[in-house]
Amino acid sequence: MATNDTVYKCLSPVGIQDPVEIFPLSPRLNSLDGKEIYFSICGEPDITIPMEKKLKSEYPNVNWRIKKTYGINPVPLSDEEKKTADGVIQGVSW
Image 1 (cartoon, helix red, strand yellow):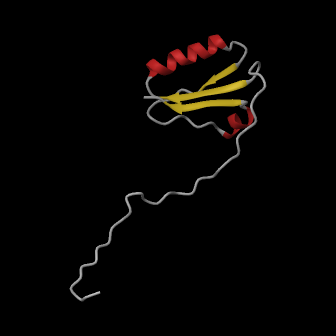
Image 2 (cartoon, one colour):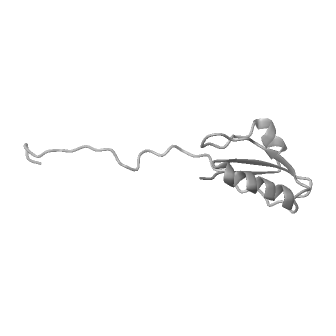
Image 3 (cartoon, rainbow, N blue to C red):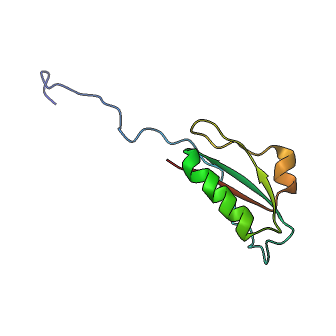
């Protein structure tokens, strides 16, 4: 390299990805009857309220536990809730 060549340094636009803990898929439930399912979806209430009503009417024998969410992040389950939950519906809607 010649003495008057310019060297540029830049950051990758991809950035640095933090390591993520990976878990295997859980086995499928054979039935939802009598199961405890947590429902935690944040976003527009005009989407989540009808979805909650539809699920409760379609699956009346499920023990639905609703995690009220505000803002853009779903409310995480506590350690005790994770131990007792049979399933979780968690996500973000716009």
